[in-house]
Image 1 (cartoon, rainbow, N blue to C red):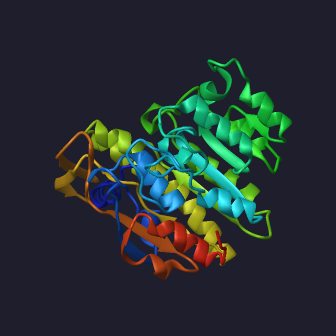
Image 2 (image 1 turned 90 degrees about the horizontal axis):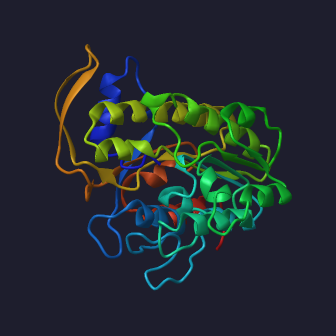
Image 3 (image 1 turned 45 degrees about the vertical axis):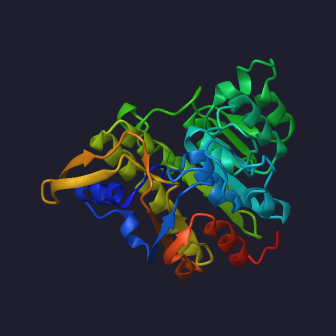
Length: 324
């Protein structure tokens, strides 16, 4: 999931990169309609919940219906059915999109409450920021110690993550959010993706993994085209890891989409020879524009066409032959 990633974001990334992006290796494409239950313009909580849980909810709500009824996520269901599961993000792992796959809360900002849901074990691997929400808490609990008691290897650096041999891995790789690419995070999402696939693919029954490139959205909120393109290109390296695995494995579906578009980005000029683009923005917030769906592997044609964002949940379960 490229948070805030619209078609213009992808086009900009393709234009400024020196070589074709891995995104161009996908075989099928479509679009996702992103509106939430209570707003034409969704936020990441409602957008993530639609993808993860297959229901429309109000902006700001995580893993619950508008009436606050808890709804199981795809991660929780497939884990209960015996598959391995993972959640990876460059933001805090308790942030709206990754939280939608693990937690249930009426307020996306309840980060310390959301962190508690990771103790339930529905994600065998979770990698991202958010150490403070696990260890520097108002209630005084050290959730990292509790995770270790539950069999997780808890690590705090990329090097520790790469060295881990555990089948259950919690990577709390920043106090809150990880740095942006321009601050030195280049390649971290690629390494996180490699590690998650390495661990989860040991399960002969299969696995489900959600990877979020969080900061495409943040660059768009800032109306900063260089910020956007650097994050798109960094996400693309992680997509390359997933596509390489799928090409070799031949039993793995890879889907790339977004929770919403951010910035109302319009490319007004550019040069592929000079690897540059000029852009204007319609907003510093999210927009209601449809977002791309790109798919590769078994079941990929299912994701062609125009779909509501609640479509992913049932499509994944159907392809896995899993009943709720």
